[in-house]
Amino acid sequence: MVEAYAGLARRVLAAPARLGRTRLVAVDGPSGAGKSLFATRLADALGALPGGERPPVVRTDDLLDGWDDQVTFWPRLERWVLGPVRAGRPGAYRRYSWVRRCFLDEAVPVPAGPVLIVEGVSAARAAIRRELTLSVFVTAPAELRLSRAVARDGAEILPELRRWHVGERAHFAADGTEAAADVVVDAAPTLPHDADRYYVRRPRPGQRDGLGGCPR
Image (cartoon, rainbow, N blue to C red; front, side, top):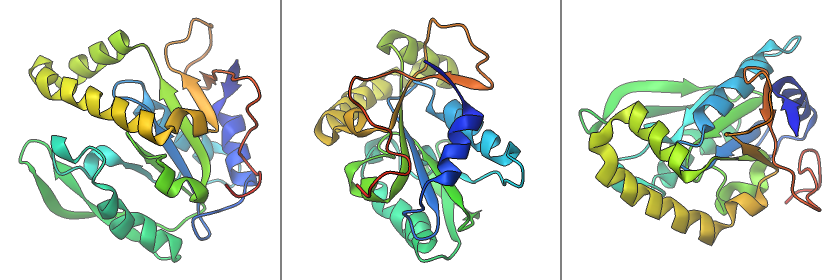
């Protein structure tokens, strides 16, 4: 079904904060699925609401210490961002340079505002699930995801990318990420829609919307 980013943004703001006073939104899914674009459009929709403000978007790719840090980066995210925001204080993180292969000195501030979006593989992992106001899983066919990743980063990353795909499949299977998500997004839909304003949600029988519901 086709749904509006603006509608989802309103539902996020109407739902309870679970990371201290902040509504934490996690946008998860495999590499090349379209997580970054979804997170950006949702942030834009939140900022466009009357009286709203655009939330920060923390991308987990910026926190990885190279390819082998696929899911083990989490303590860094907790220490730099989630912990401070949970306590009502601003956080800050240092971006990893994939060219220089080190963390840059400049700190990126993360305010403890009404909403925080974290986007990337394992962002909606079980360890943070109880503190999420919304979890989104973005998916697309494997062939399309691979072609998107190669177009974005170049064919020279293929060996590392194939290892990455094996790792993310293992993580998602063990974590049950997609089954636990509040919203599953089809990022390669056949339904016609304005992709800047709408997304296609993949319906699942018997699934209830987690927004505003009981604590997980």
